[in-house]
Length: 273
Image (cartoon, rainbow, N blue to C red; front, side, top):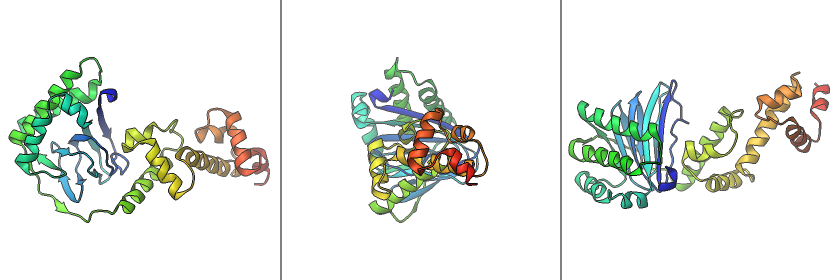
């Protein structure tokens, strides 16, 4: 569905963390519903306290993200580019919501219990089916969600927070990506996590890494893996086990990278132990 400008996520985690849905920004509109857990949510310079059933509408190009407290968290989110929204004929409804509630960047809404069930069901259909065969149906569900927000939603009271400067935002994004890499070093097989987790393009994140470190993201990941592998070998572990544990499925690739980076073979590092 990404090809037509509709991107969906259903996350259900036993332990929430800052990587579940980090603070970020993109050129799409977005609807998010919290299913389980209590957490904060920031939109631009306003922070809201979310409870299960609360629904958030974010306008395009606005900084936003979950502020989790470490407990279980589950949420549904649908993201759609403006062009797709216009082609589906939903722009007028969105403009109506913006006008009714006086929105500038988006807001968090409380809904009546029976309305929560309707919105929950609609978003689950969109997020869990993820089919390209009937796109019109998905926009019909989105239309029903917007209708319920406009008719029955109540804007939650938020707390003003200091808006970060562009430089501070870059540092925050860079730190979030490096934290994610450190926690998932052995599971990252490609750079798709940048879009799936952080909702940024590879080129933008590569620019950040080149700015802060002088190297692109994948080179950073490789260096972190090699450093970890070297430590494991130096502690007495076998080179092959260290390679697998650090995400290298091809030992020959690992060996060449290791020698090039350290100027020593894995066996030489082990002998020096």
